[in-house]
Length: 236
Image 1 (cartoon, one colour):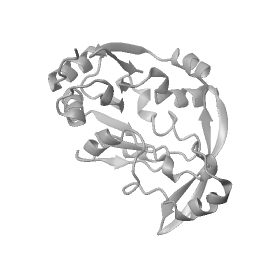
Image 2: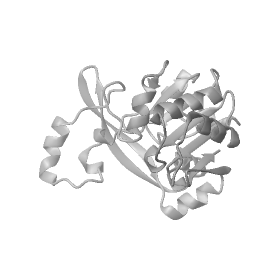
Image 3: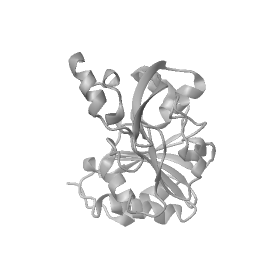
Image 4: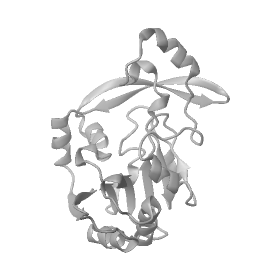
């Protein structure tokens, strides 16, 4: 039987993973796998900020696949529908566009102070806390890299915290692939809302197969703890 998870449990967990005052956390959290988290995502975020303090900062993926051109979507659409989709879809707006990943955690994160969202139409991130505003300006090409959005990971106090997530989904993998010139490069197109007009942006991105992901994870230091029988990863 799973036990109740309280704020104090999260605080103890984070400290055991080496997270401390001033840390930068890229949070990927799916609490549905843990069960019985009292206070839900708000409990998680409150505990995290209690550990990292006022000098710490949290970034959360807020990817919006709904802004992609239909030719780039994994969902199948008849070619005859592409014109309608392109006309009716909404371009990316950092305030209005909903996230398609970690949406519940972001819903609570928005209630925090100093929340901002980066500018990429598909692979944006929310930032909370003492972040550098320059990090909000992503490169259109290869949007997840250590040169822009993950620039803070050059610091020793930066961690990718993964709760209820598979290690192979670490947000660091595409950035490592870009640095080492691994994986495959492909083209995507997405729409951006700009000055009341919708414009299309074309950019390059990196794709890694499962074997490449495993190889890239060997470049990381990963500490693992258990919470209600689920692995919690802290990757740096």
